[in-house]
Image (cartoon, rainbow, N blue to C red; front, side, top):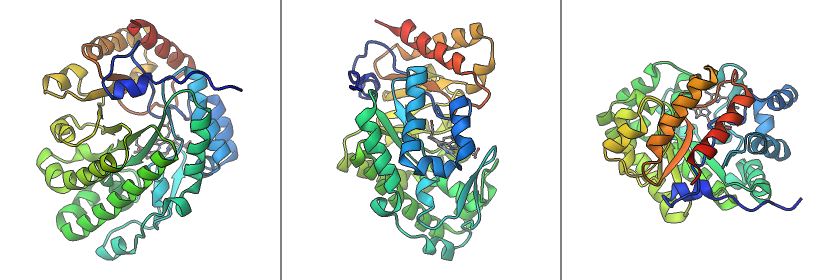
Length: 345
Ligand code: 1CP
C-alpha cells in the first residue's frame, strides 16, 4: 500500500514552528485498553511482543490507525536495554518490572556490562527500520533515565518511596556515581542506535526522579543527564523530550538541560510552567484518570489545557502520565478529534 503523505506536525511543534493544529499522542498509547492488544498479549509475554519485530510493528502502529494520533512510540519498555547488560528482569502483568538480581553493592555495579546495541537489541533496530518505512507519522524512540532505571534495579521492582534507591545514593556515593555512569552510557548508546535506525524524536522517561529535591537533583543527577543529552545533541539532530512525574519543583533543572521539549504531569499547568519562564516546547498534561469521567468534563478540561498550550508555538497535547487499562478506545478517538478540531487554524 502506498504510504500516505508524511504528517510532520509533531516534529514542527517540537521545533516550535507554527502548526496547522496542535499535535497529540498518548503515553502508553499501545496497551491493555485496546482489545487487539489484549488478544496479542494472551499469546506472548511482554518481552516476546517487543522482541518479535513483526509483533512490535503491529502493536506500535495500532494506536496510529485506531486513534489518529500524530506520533507513534516504539513498543518496548524502559527495561529493554537492561536485560542484555545483566539485569534479570521480567514484566509481570498488573505489577510491572520485577528483578531477580537487584543491585545493592559496588560489586553488583561492577558486574553490569556495557550495551552493544547491534548485538544486544537487534530486534529494536529492525522494528524501527520497518516502522519508519510504513508509518505516516514520526516514530518516537525512548529510554529510561538513570535515576528511574536505578530505582527498579535497586528496589527490585516498583516502589512507592524509593528508600533503598536513595539510601544507596546517600550511603554509597562512589558506587552510585559508577552506576549513573554505566546507565548513562547505556542510555546514550541505546538512543543513538534508535535514532540511527530511523527514530525521528526521542523521549527520556525520568518518571520517578521527582522523589528528589532540587538540590539533590542538581548534585546527584544533573551531571549524568547533561552528559546524556549533550552527547545526543552533538551526535544526532532529533528533538529530545524529557518527562517526569511530580517534577514541578525540578522544572528549572530540566530547563537548563539542552532538551527541546519538557513533558509535564497534571500537577503543573502549562500556564504555571510558562510563568516560571520555561520557553521550551511543552507536552502534556491531561490527568489520565479524567478519561474515566463523563465526556463533558473531559472536554472542558482538555479545552482549558489547549487554551493554555496555544498561547505560543511549541505545544504538544498528551496526558500527564500513561493511559490506564480501564479507558475506552472511543473516548480516546473522541479526544483526538477534539484536539485536532478545536485547535485547527
Ligand atoms: O505506547 C507506549 O507508550 C508503549 C511503550 C512503553 C513505554 C514508553 C511501555 C510499554 N512502557 C513504557 C515506559 C515505561 N515503563 C515507564 C516510563 C513511563 C511511565 O512512567 O509510565 C516506566 C516507569 C516503565 C516501567 C513499567 N513497565 C511499568 C510501571 C511500573 C510501576 O513502577 O508502576 C509497567 C506496568 C511496565 C509494563 C509495561 N510496559 C509497557 C506496557 C504496555 C506494559 C504493560 C504490560 C502488560 O501488558 O502487562
